[in-house]
Image (spheres, rainbow, N blue to C red):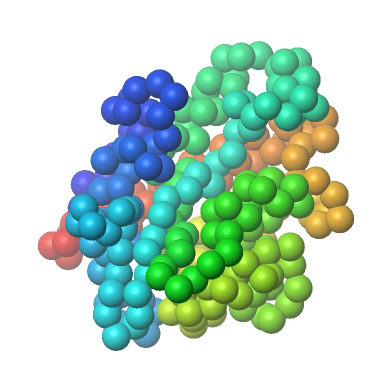
Length: 242
């Protein structure tokens, strides 16, 4: 399995286009990484046929249409006035370096999209639109952890609409293992490591330049760790002839 964890997906699609929708390499990497046995041994092969729109699985497990989403929000392209003022006080070269790392495979994940008959906003949409989450993967993962425990969270109703998808993994620890998110949780997956202190009563956006620097530092450390984890997974899969 050939995965280049340094490849910036923006380089193959041109300026202003969305790698989630337009990068063929990102789609191929998602298919390679996440087409594998589930924790109970059942197969979760993904199709990237043209009719599938992005990635698709249909079997006796059910039907699942999957889409890509960034999990490495840099906020450097946001129009929020408060965020723009914070970012304007920091060097542009630091923002560019952050974006370059964020647009590699470690900065992306797949989530279920709507299948026929399912209505309402998707996980991708709600995690981006809810100000308490603000596209942060640490806060999203905390909501998913609480989903498995049947506890309330800002995304509870949205995640409940996709209960069939999350049931595929059995529990939170196995979900984390499957998607190689281990570096964002404690060793026993009982707690999420937050980039900034957890406060679902407030905005998930960094409140000032110091908070943004702390967020960026922790996000970059996570991306480096997940890159190494993806490399190890791909090497093991290649050794096994995959």
